[in-house]
Amino acid sequence: MALFGKKKPLPTDGQMELVEHLAELRNRIFRAILYLVGGMVLTYNFFKPLYNLINEPLQRALLKADVIGVIKLDSVQDAFFLKLQVSFFAGLAITLPMLVMELWGFIKPALTAKEREPVKFLAPFSVLLFLAGIGTGYAVLPLAFDWMVGYISEIPKAELLQDAAKYLLLAMKIILAFGIAFQLPVILLFLARVGILTSTLMTTYWRHAVVVIAALSAIFVPSNDPVTMIMMAIPMAGLYVLSISLVKAFEPRADGKQNKPLLTMILVSLAPAVMLGGVSYWITRQRAEPIKKPGMTAPTPAPTPSPTPVPEGTLTVEKRLAVLEEKVEKQAEELKALRTVLEQKNPTPASLQATPAPTPEPNATPNPINPNMPQDGR
Image: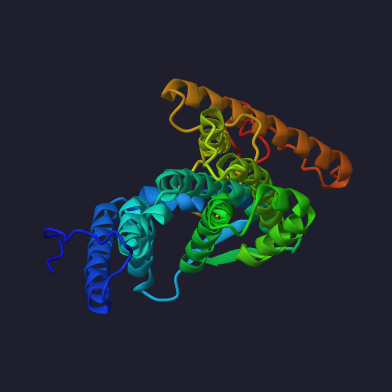
């Protein structure tokens, strides 16, 4: 079977032979790899803006806590592999819809027509929830790193030597953890559609669900910090409440017919879009203040304060000359005052003061016998 050739019609009874399953799996894996490689090639040339976007939360935390942070690379090839990692995650993000389509295309022949019906709603709902989760994870990064960097500022003269690859993996793990955690309504709706859960059961055991959500948040968070755990547990609890309404809207009625109120479906479907919009607004507010230098670098030490600072490039030559002359005059006055104080503390004795020599008359000729007397003997 060709990778991109004409596909065979799928069986309607959910039956496929083992050889057909293996051939289908092989082709879809190859296509998924080609999609991912194409995404990496596309994002490879955008390394700097992508890396600065990921690195920005940590840099803001370092500047806020006044902590010196320096990127550390252990070997010369680490920069190249770091660029490949950024390209991989970026390529995975832009090709994720196609990868999900390939996965669904492999699972779809094993399902019956009745089992495929819920996916028509779950697929777009899942994509919106995943995007909202990724946005929430990125919005939580500044809060998490503020909490972590705060402990560095308590250590005297401590500097952060951050490994670039480890930071990238940590940030991406947190973001992906939020994206996966936001799939909770999809999982609960699927369990309700197969008859395992009901809205009444979910309402009765909501306290148990909150405990389970808190435990899952502690497990999913790779940084193990309480700020990220709380920021993950709160949206998941809200998504659980949303899932109760979602399950109640889609569960069958007493007569066995499907209950699909149009208004409820629209409102529930718009919930992820509202969450994504709120997260986008939060990220925009966080990024409203530009950072002076892109990337994580050591903060520039403050210049020595002067009475009249002269910023370079902002004054003309005449103005700078006038300012410098003013500074020289002030320094000369200060030097004169210091000399006066020094003379008052250490006065010169009168006996050591030199007697001025007598000034000879202008027309007098010195006497060769006695030079102190004039030649005429007077």
